[in-house]
Image: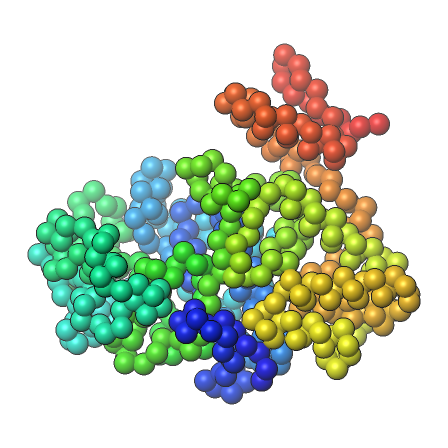
Length: 459
């Protein structure tokens, strides 16, 4: 096949040659479910949703596994703060994850394993590493991975052991033989709740983060997968440590191709809670419709940085309206299948086959929309809709999309009013004014009174 993908491991474009002809096995590291998903999570989910959609459009069978990390230090801390069980917290957050993903048109993965269901498999993998001399139990009860005993550690991230030593910590404090070693099994602590620990030959405890994915990936997809993916922030140490664990145990490559999507920034600054420029998916969807948000993510290449700003989302909305205008002008002819030899379709395919080149593919959609506007061809309108489906776009009713414009429902308006009130309370008057102006642009007039803020639709 002609599809080429950028392999982070080799730092080069490589053809995708499935281990089992016609069948692609893909593992993507999912979310740690202690809070609502943010825009960075949306970027990763949409990126790999496009990957699996295009693989299927290319005639391949796809087994897509995206895990859920439902045991972790942050999860334990949040559950204790909330006064709820870990399972209650994680069930609630998984439900929220699904709601957000469904809103963005993200197809469910084939399998969505939860880490807590695979603890026995993790312990088995730790035992194999221990037998091979790659793992040891420290004096504090933790079981650690002996990094220096695995040849090639650092090959994914490009970090040498000497470079890693520059950030090392004092080994004695955490019971490690070497500061570079990482934990496979954490011994239970007195203040941790009962549902945060499991019995094992090493004593009560819980798995480390990295071993979770090695175990789930191996059990569900086999010792070597075709594609292993995740956000760029996972390249090191998470994916590097996965390689050390899985390949240390099996002696086989963990993945043929490693894929990593780029970071999300806000007005060209890295998005983070500490900078106050952090947005959940729900924050975005309170102000912009889901398809606009998806289109905003897709029209940037998955490996590039994605700069989030209101101006970029506004532009995405206007651009998407241009495509829907063509579909509103001419009723699309239903296509039984895409003829990939057709010039527009061929160019779209060439773009997607070159490392999922969505910017170029989207450009083809705009060229096709222009042709639909000129020729009034129902067949070309059908092709526009069919190619859009490969990206999870343009499947809505054109009139409904265009008539909705950028208007908001009452719940979304209430959310924005609350955000404006919070900005005013924090004396961030620039943000408060921006929200007022944003609502005014959508035809919503705010009225501030002593009893609060009300709104009405502009005449």
